[in-house]
Image 1: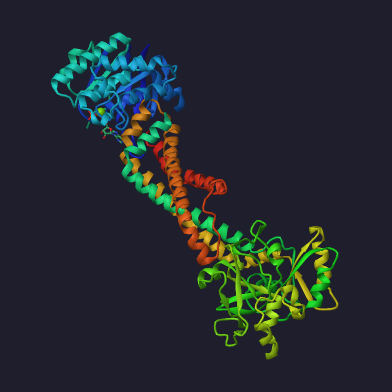
Image 2: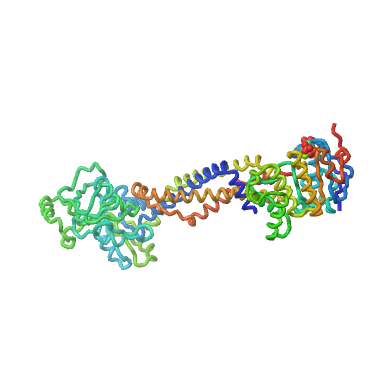
Amino acid sequence: MSIQLNNVEFCYSKATQKNILSIDSWSTTVGDRQFIYGPSGCGKSTLLNIIGGILKPTTGTVSVLGESLDKMNSHQRNRFRANNIGYIFQQFNLINYLNAEENIQLAHHFSSRKKTTKVRDKIHYLLSDLNIKSDDWSRPVGMLSVGQQQRIAIARAFVNSPQLLIADEPTSALDEVSTNNFMSQLSTLCKEHHTTLLFVSHDTRLKHHFNHVHEFSQINSKKEQ
Amino acid sequence: MLIRLAIKSLIYRKASILLTIVTVSIGIFILLGVEHLRDQTKSSFTNSVSGVDLIVGTRTSSLNLLLYSVFRIGDPTNNISWQSYQNLSQHNTVDWAVPISLGDSHQGYRVIGTTPSYFDFFRHGNQQQLHFRHGRKFESVFDLVLGASVANKLGYKIGDRVVLSHGIGHTSFIKHDKLPFNVIGILKATGTPVDHTLHVSLQGLEAVHMTNPLAIKRLAKTPELALTQATYLKPKSITAIMIGLKSKMAVFNFQRTINTNKNEPLSAILPGVALSQLWQTMSVFDNALGLITLFIIISSLLGLSATLLSSLKEREPEIKLLRTIGASSGFIFLLVEFEAMLIALLSALIAIIGLNLTLSVAQEYILSNYGITIASHFTSTSHSQIIIGLFLLTFIAAIPPALKGAKKCHV
Ligand SMILES: Nc1ncnc2c1ncn2[C@@H]1O[C@H](COP(=O)(O)OP(=O)(O)OP(=O)(O)O)[C@@H](O)[C@H]1O
Ligand SMILES: [Mg+2]
């Protein structure tokens, strides 16, 4: 069980043929907390989108949790992502006009997990665990604070008990105290659910929360000119 | 989940959505309203007379015969003899025959001379009989029964005395003022030319056309003269005859018999057929109207499409997020389509409710001013085809934004 990339190249526009990524070979064993750091604009989000199956590499093979993403059709990739991967972004993590409960239910809806009433209990448990007051569960999330929204995003990411959690600079909008809170809650939940954390940031101060640290330039052989 | 998402998303963007709903519901309102009016006008028109199997007149075009006998438009070129009426009414396939005589008027309204049985046999609309709002049918020579509009416009009531004019139109100088008629009955509104007609007995018409001043003087002294006592006022000629047959199967045979009649040049028409032929001649306007309303609805649906398309830009993060947590591109397509359908549904509801309210208010006005009966309750079942077509058009109009939304994210 691992993430393995071979001969992966990626460019956004076929016209310019300007490669953003060029990875000969990179693999990491799943388990524990992985940290990738690198400067802004170097292609970190792009790499995460390839691992999550949102973007397809121009060439190369991508295997995540023992499944070859490049051999799946788009429907299978949607399913795989919904069932096995949780996401937390820097912003736009939630749908503004839905409340916390509905946002989390939505993630559950797209997975192929059984739709039972137990989901509500799980959602409530996660929300309380992340210190969201029950008054705020049914308010549109657009009316909540950024910190609250990021914590609801954690709950959303864990509702399907994913094997892999992809976090793309989720703390960059938070102050130091909130960041530390956020990191410790995230770590605890990852341990509880046996979830591998793949965390990306340009902020190297976060290093100490992780047990594996990768520098992006070591992964990507495509150098900035 | 799709439904809840669509509803909440529409509510979230209510400002621009509300505007779209108003536009689309105006389009639907016009479409359904015009369609309803077309429908009702047509049925009001083609049901001006029903339950009459044949109308017989002098030999003329069927359109001409129809126009003067049913719509009281134009002039009968020739009359037919009383003898022909009697021959026809005694024919063994004839159930009933009602003579009518035209040619006089009152303040621009046509006068029709007939027998009391006219009120029993004449039918309009869906086999509806004539009903009296006040009074009864005539029994005396100088009794007069008014159509609803005539009574309304001229303000006549039972017991009023009315003088007929010779000829047609306001400018008629010869007035039959020595022998006034007595209003004995007022009919309920029918939405047909009957509303604009004054009905008198054939004998009454015969009386006012007498030239002998002595005879007129004598008649003026007996204004209550009963029809049964006035056999000497038997008419010599009439304008047309309405005929009901014992068996509808015989109608074509009997029509041929009349049309080939050797004694007198007669022609017989089937009023239902002639009415729909006449309506056909006006179908150009009818179709043009339909085309205009179609364009109105298409342009309002294009507006809907444009609104959805431009909203995709601000919804990009939302769509990306949905895709990331596992929504397929088909889901996004359906989401946008469903939103369009919801808008169409809401608009259709608003339009139907608005139309019902408008119709119930305008019904009286339209009947009294245009003589068209409009059903006030607009049943959406009778227009279900239009509604289905509308949703189909909405679906098509929403395809561009839905496709664009579905393609928002690579994958
Ligand atoms: N949708 C896109 N279309 C075209 N080019 C893009 C697109 N998204 C990103 N890029 C380009 O790809 C490069 C890498 O972008 P990416 O978002 O992966 O960087 P990043 O390392 O995540 O940066 P940051 O730390 O600021 O988030 C950038 O130069 C960016 O201009
Ligand atoms: Mg990024």
